[in-house]
Image 1 (cartoon, helix red, strand yellow):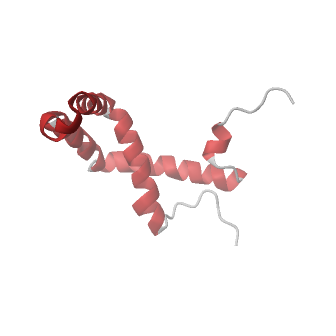
Image 2: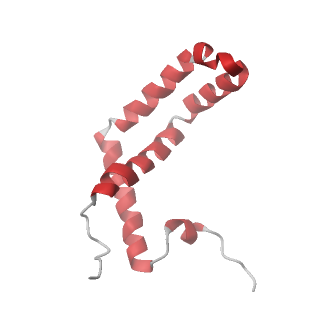
Length: 106
């Protein structure tokens, strides 16, 4: 049974694992300022980070949660996943390998 590259149906694992993974990665990029602030606070505070970095942790959680709960953001990540899957089904080459630089001389 050949898979149609343009097929839009999502399997359970795609909905519950693969798309949320893309969402986490993109949300971390979009909340990079909060991630940076929290990371810096943790490095500076050492063992006391649990107490000292509450403000930064709360800001980071709020930023990430806003993206996780946004249906438009989910759709954006879903479309990105479907595009990658379609390309994989056409070429048989995973995105990571397609994006790697090819050697210029043999």
